[in-house]
Length: 487
Image (cartoon, rainbow, N blue to C red; front, top):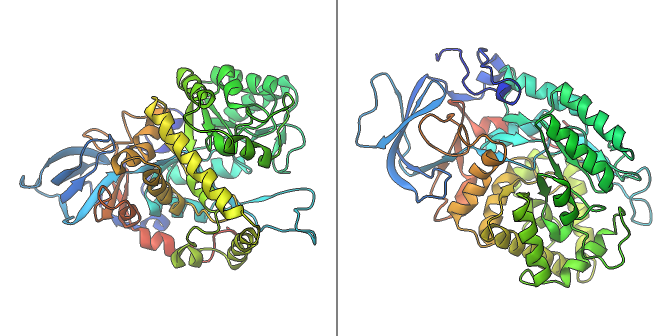
């Protein structure tokens, strides 16, 4: 069995120290390979940089790191565990930048079809989500907003200690929200001093990023961003009351979802620090072309301020009732109530005249924006956001996001880079994760097939290496069958 030093534990988010725990019995149930020296032979290497694939290579893993990449004709070192990966590809571990350890609760409506007070709830799924992410090839992820931050922090500690399986976690603090929130689980911040104290407290508790939400005001957001930056932490936002260009001017680091569904700056007559109806935001974007001067000016402003955008196309695709249903495998993983809720929401949407066509058009426009943003020099990240109407599952959504980026016009190599190296770059970890190169952590995903030719092969995960330990995705998925939505 391999030695017990873990070279890439989550301590890098906190102190950079190295932990020395051995995998627990629970973790070992899901391990296929745990030898200190592993040779992946005859494999296609897609390194995550956007460079062309390297055919018939050997990737040598030693003590949790990538030791060398050589021609497959070079004999592996004596004592190496040799894994013949003929017909397989290896990509870097996915870096999920809009992921959660929560999921949409059952969607309940009154007899008029509305969600009654106190509003919408979400459900923590801290048991099933980490396993699903890891099984799909997500080896690092940001929680991007938390409704149970102590749960997320404790799950991170247990993963770091090798007590449970899961990705490395960047735990985002509780949502920084404004007045009249639709989610009773979120904090309400209306004073700048309250925002600063909230950031200070949760930074002290160990969160490693923050997320602002739709009704936060400009002064409160400015205070939160300033205070987070004093701690060396970044702030992202799913905004509405504050528009994209206002947020960029305030120094925000990242914006979630892209503007077509969230940026309110083009809504006519919008009051300051007020969030218009989502239908008004969508309508304002329906009236604009991505090549128009005002949209191009927005892109230029975001790029000039170094504001990253997180693509979350899967959560929006789930709202298009003419798009494909979830696979049988995904349905089997869901709790009966979660599946019922999603299918009911989808069926209800399909009865509204023109709804499907409108949502499809908005999805395509968001895709066009993301492509234009990158072509202008913007940093695009990726994550599925497993919320919405329940049609986006952890892990599966990450894989679907890569496919939708290709549909948007990116090459498969570009899409893989967005889902791997770009996230690492945003977090300042590009020297250790996000691409396949000697010296980096052995966070790798073995795929059957060639995603550069058929991007759907991103789903064919056979082995996931995290810090050099090879996990069995089938076992991980089987361990949470019927649980998504309840635990």
